[in-house]
Length: 129
Image 1 (cartoon, one colour):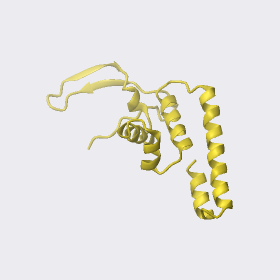
Image 2 (image 1 turned 45 degrees about the vertical axis):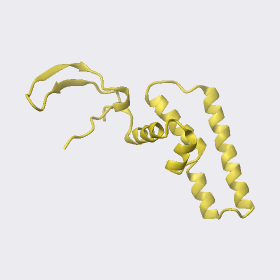
Image 3 (image 1 turned 180 degrees about the horizontal axis):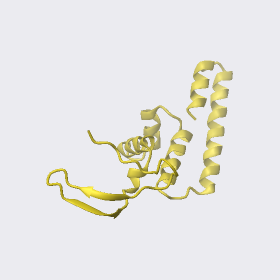
Image 4 (image 1 turned 90 degrees about the vertical axis):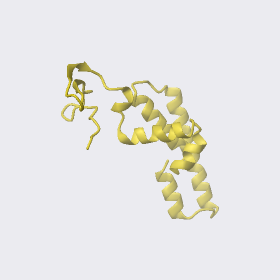
């Protein structure tokens, strides 16, 4: 059984490097200081999101439907992946994301007020933001 290599040190949180590679067939071993791919360091949840995002060809509406989450949540997960790959998310994008979440929350509350959805459904939708 193969296990996913950890990307961060469990003690200090520093990125781990790979120091030995070996061939399971002929037992050849290579030692050095190797870095895993950027995606290998992502948490499993982020990797699953990336798979869905790619399968949906980057169409956020399709990602929303497949994962059953709101647009702001998709954006938040995408921002998490972007940061996990070592890139910065612009403050302009973070402000827009916050505004989108507020708008989505207000829409849910309006639907609750008008009786379109139940309190239980409203609670679940707000949790998924």
